[in-house]
Image (tube, rainbow, N blue to C red):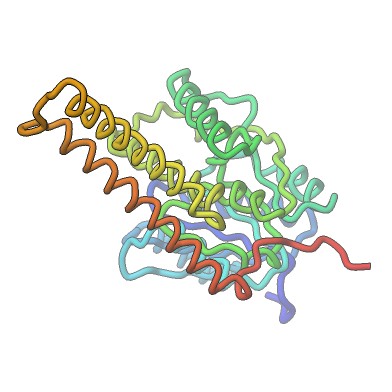
Length: 313
């Protein structure tokens, strides 16, 4: 390994399934060498992966330029990526999944698009070679992502990405937000480009997702929608919902009041009256949450930078 920092740091989080580490390393390392890239590999084990650790230690002891980081327990892929970013010494960070997902030879496309002036290059597996069930799941998921965020990306779940290290400081990943790196970057004005790559046969197995995973993905989408749309304007989000709820309660109470005045209808034992009052109170609470959020943002506005400067002449 050379004394100077490598040009490319390859970050590989191992958090769920993984392929043979020796095969994965050999395939991508050979392609990076063919591209004349000076590189290092950083493997982060998010949990107990005994066989993967043994295989990586064999590679390490064989003199290969790689680093191994073991977490005490599983903290999630976002945490693994963030630690990999912190340890990376290269100016360019290439993320790879722990299984062979895309053709290594397509790395040349990724680096070419990056050199065109993009700070983040993501990959789209196209044409997809998965079973029909896999493709339907992916299509529906990405359709919802595009509709909720306005981002044009077709395959944000592809793990091969090339990132300018300078923009890493703008990410603070937690939970499952690692899936939305390109969308978060686009929302902050970072130049993001998606490039087509060929899908490997190892990535074409039929995959069934548990119902609980679908629920988690739906919640992740709602989280992302709020972060992208209303982080700097919470009153618009909570205020609109609060106004709608409060207005619904007001209509109910006004209707009951008119009934009482003109039709002499008793209000005792009317569950609808309780519902109307509850909606008014709940709507006011939602509005108050948005207002408090605005006050917090106002007091911290000088410390928050939510824009990017491309050039100063």
